[in-house]
Each structure stands twice: as C-alpha cells, then as structure tokens.
Image 1 (tube, rainbow, N blue to C red):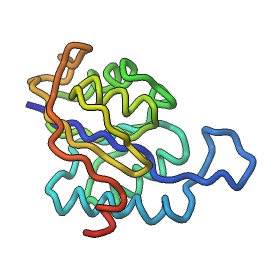
Image 2 (image 1 turned 90 degrees about the vertical axis):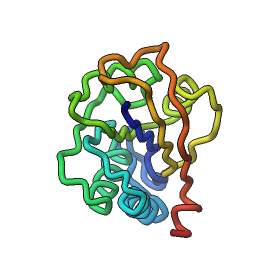
Image 3 (image 1 turned 180 degrees about the vertical axis):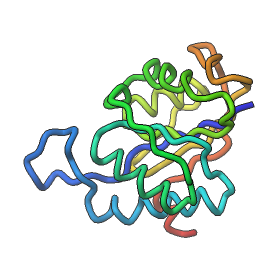
Length: 164
C-alpha cells in the first residue's frame, strides 16, 4: 500500500507583472506553507519523497513544507507538473522509487483536483495550501494508472491547519 499526499501550492501574488511560472507567494502563502509542514509532522505524515512543479509558487511552498515537516530529502523539481493534468501527475508518480511509501506531490489546479477525483471518486475543492491524504492499494508506484483507485483519508485546508 502507498500513500499519496496531494498539495496545491500556497497562495501566490499577482502584484508584480511577471510570467505565471514566476509568480511568488504572497504573505498568506508564506504563512500557510510552514503550517502545512507542521501539520504533516504532527500527523506523522512526513513524506519519503517530495516531487514538485518548477513554478516559483510551488517550489517555495514545497521548500517551506519540507523545512517545517522535518523532511530530510531533496525536493525533486519537474517542469512536467507545471499546469499538468492528472495523467501527467500519474506519469511522474510512476517514476517514484518503490522504497518510498509516502509521496508528496506539489502542483496546481485544476490538475490536482482532477487527480483527486480520478483516484478517489470524490470531487472536492483544493484551495491554495490544501492537501489530501490518499491511500492507494498498489504495491509499486509504477502500477499507478488511470484505473487505480484509492481512498481519501483526510483533506486539510489552510483554515484547519491554522487551528493546529
């Protein structure tokens, strides 16, 4: 069995005229991302591997989550997750080393919401800095495909993370 943590990047800023890929986190995003890391640590959900979109807002989210969760590995960046659909997420996740039982993917909507729906059958919103814990009935990441179904264990939103 594998656990997938699906995290939408924290809130980004639209103040500066930069390309979408280069938008930074805003003040709320800079405070929400560390909270997510703390929730992961306190819930004993520190990932074995973090894979993340190369977009600045996603990278900064992943870095803060890693730092505050106690994650000791490297955050792997891939442009393949920038504005990706669910099949692209599955493709990246299939390459996860099999010894990793818990993987955190950091990316963007609508692809992450679509992935969550594909995997669990549950359609739910993933606002910025929200993350879902999905239990997958697979033994190897390479077995993750369009037919893989999992169960939603929990969905955390920034407001509930702020209460912790």
